[in-house]
Length: 541
Image (tube, rainbow, N blue to C red; front, side, top):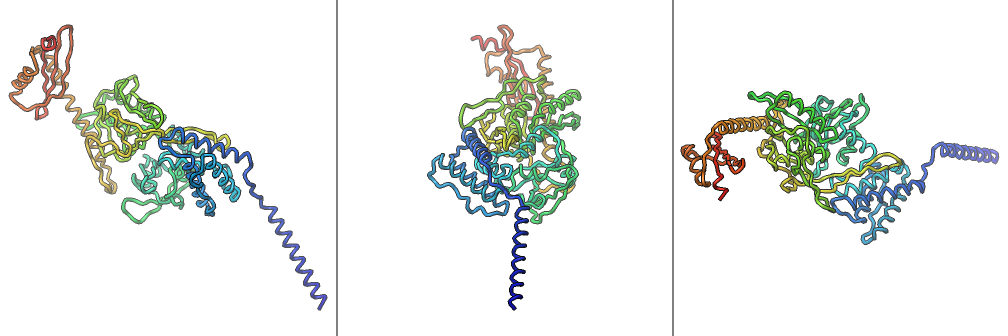
């Protein structure tokens, strides 16, 4: 009996030793995650300070250090919770903390979180999420672009090639949903039937509600030949559906053009998808081709164009305006107003212009449309523009390590030449043309584009009438001497047999001591007439 007890005890002891050996082996086989090093933490602190300093110096909206600290903590909480981990220990800094105390509190929370979840600190991800929180607290357009998002932005603005599905997306400020601005021509998205205004509910099964545009881009881009599934909701349909797309190499052309022949007229139609690094030269190549084909006027389509570089907008406007015209003014929180004017170009196009806009024409698109409208260079057709009157500067930084990332910060509001601040207001077109909310399946008719072409044809007709009237007036040697405005109007009334008319233009020429005034009038039936008056005696009195 005693021997049996001893044997049982020895057996249990062997099992215990074996279990300890196995446990030690397993423990030794799993690498332990070390807490952040002093060097890594020092790099984190410097980067956060750099972000705070840049925001407080450059951002249009002022934030206190305490506000930025608490926004950073919110960013950390979102990141921790997105990994299905407990973030309840991350609390806001107490009210009344000084700048120094608030920053020290943030550092303690960063260290505590990194020590609790060392995996989240790998490649400085936790630090980047803290900075994202601070940036996102400024406005909808201020953001931290991590190395991948910054490269995506650079590729897009440079018209580079990348693996993707071919969509332009934006974040709705009210619903926080990701909205398709437009599918790019001849891309997987276009061929799959993706439409403008479709809402993205999920990307690859991941809920898109809390994704930024840059995060969504990361999920949708990838190696050509790989696939991604989007869950889409369209219109008022309450039943989302999945679309699986195979990624391809996407080339982003910022400008495309074609010559349209309509009612005996040759029209140069240009579509700008974005105002990027290559826009100026791409547009100039298109315009030179139009010159060779002797187009009579231009339709510039900036619908669904979310904007881009202000310099690109100035380049576009400069092709249609005399040098030195006020295109826009930039008004920062700190410092003086900066006025941007049109630049000299090799060829200035003076033929009639119509600009086509819609509710997704934003930023640089609105700079261009606003300048053309205010300076009476072009007629706007479509619906009210988006109303993004803010300017963002991109500040490259080296983080993490020596990688390139960037702060994208709203620094100012821009105004149109007349001083109109369009932020959240938009620009109302001269000719309003609505599109149906739900396009007919398979319908390719574009009412706004058609209306823009018709408006241009109308302008071409008016120009021809005026040119003919000018030619008639020039051919006539009869210049009527008058002693005042009353005699001018009496003469015109007599020539038109009492018809109603409006004064369209008055132009005065001086040749030595002789002053000649050319008066252009338009009768109620649309006819243009010109009359020349010698007004030398009037102005010499």
